[in-house]
Image (cartoon, rainbow, N blue to C red; front, side):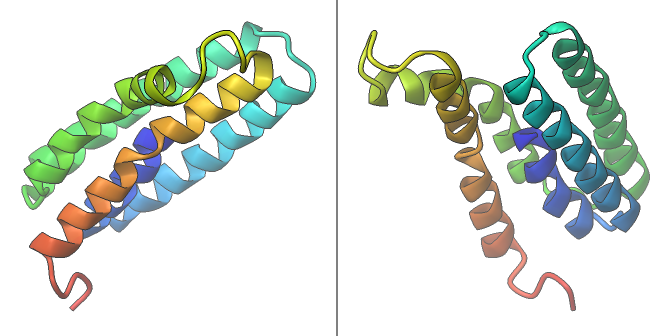
Length: 132
């Protein structure tokens, strides 16, 4: 979800409002899957949903990059931090063997979303008037 949330403004500033809406719709779908897995954990549907949305995101990034050619590559490079940020921040900030289970999963997901602030800062610095 963090990758999709970070790519949404990149797609908008890259000239693809359709990709922005696709990102937001996929985030809504993954949020529903995440809530479902937290309430009634089965583990079977979560991994396939994440894999499917990840492949869709890769196709969207390729489309926006190759067709519009207006993508901010510095912000796009920061997307590479998102899959690793959750575990890295958890290793530094969470005490070992104290936080476990669902709480740890939610915290790691929140930590994974932290590079979104960097992506937004880069976009705002490089595009002072983004929607004009």
